[in-house]
Image 1 (cartoon, helix red, strand yellow):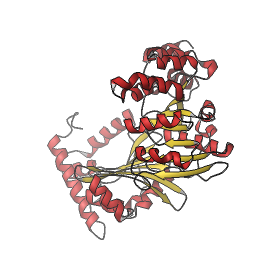
Image 2 (image 1 turned 60 degrees about the vertical axis):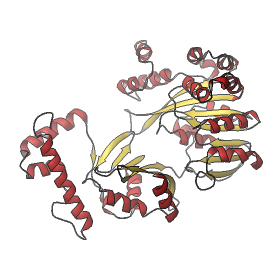
Image 3 (image 1 turned 90 degrees about the vertical axis):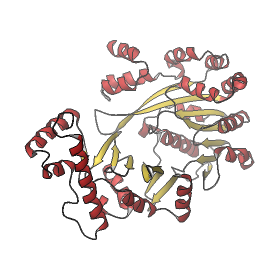
Image 4 (image 1 turned 90 degrees about the horizontal axis):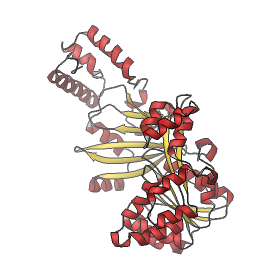
Length: 431
């Protein structure tokens, strides 16, 4: 509206101040306050800064151009019980919810962030809501460290991963919904080669990708597959625990950072005494953790872990570059001996139906790949992935192109997700 000169920035600021004041008055009152829940456009009209007809014309054109979504029918957000807000996530199929003072609640549905209709949240409202589900120990830990990760189960039917963080002297909250049921490979669209990776007696298997791409869910499906098919002693170290497993053919014990151990590195130093066959390390974050993971993989254990990386070559670089230069050749040799495979994934909104679809890059550590890692010829790895269909390898561009050609995702979405855009254009044009 400012860019189109319908209002000035000063008028917008005055409208936002009025909106916040009205909402704060309602939050502190035992009964609704007249005018307490109004959208900014309504307030600008009431202040005389904007004509209602011009507002409607603007909104019609603006919403039509970029498809802004505001979700309505949100009675749960009037509750003072934060579990009702979590129930709303389940009702609408949201994967995430974000609460920041001065903003309306935001939820993510099928990868798209959507605003919840209503007035901005106050810092006091957020703090009261989230402190209502925390223990005294949780509150103390958060106020000391200015951040907290916590998992929460509601009625044994739903689980959530909750992150609290200090944000401009207020509490910011991010919530991730977790399925109480561990999905299988077919349901998630995970390539079957991951079963081959976790069937290895030892070594290192990595699931990587950007935040929110489903890495934890993929690992959970892999662990559950092993749980149902092999007699293994499985130990997980997580931050926090997301999926809860029930031991079947395998024995599974789960440890959580902050509650059962202080750090990945500390937990891994003593894990050998627990006689594990398979170990899941929630994330390879630092030198000590990576060093411990490599040692465990070398000593006859199968280790699963995750990293935030964009492609398979980047994974290898990240691991090696954590170490001082004098040790990097040794690390490349060690990594070449233990690495079983890498699965790089992205979750992309579908256009053919509701939901998202998995796009994957797959690196399988055949002999030639091990040689390239050991000799630091990482630039050639991508060519081997592109030519490795017979061994089960697959490039991310190939996965994106196949999804576009199948009508599952849009070309624009695939193009924005590709690291090699011109190559992707050629793949699509060739069909």
